[in-house]
Length: 162
Image (cartoon, rainbow, N blue to C red; front, side):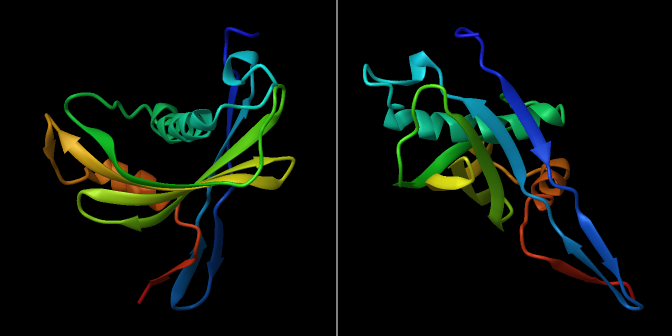
């Protein structure tokens, strides 16, 4: 399957703990697996540095594809800032896992943390700030996307039920 990219998306289940007056929700982190193919590497079989960022972009896009949320001129995200940390090299044939976690959500932007793992060892991390746009203008993030992003907060959220 050299010409086709195999993508598998997994979600960790949310954990709900109930008490008399509050609900503690342990949010899930999105995970996607992808294999490193020949086209992703140099002559020595080491993955090109730009492909780490490409794979993270695919993982972010896959979140929307899985929920049938279109990204088109009526609404889309653009990258404002990226901070990348290359820790180890990926090689031809490696199966990588990309995690996506929400760090911060504002009215028109979000900050995400993404990590790439090989055999449960972190080899790359990325923090990316994205801004929501509609027809080339900054816009408020729609409620359905805020709800989707909310599922990718990793810290427990406490909701008062009183």
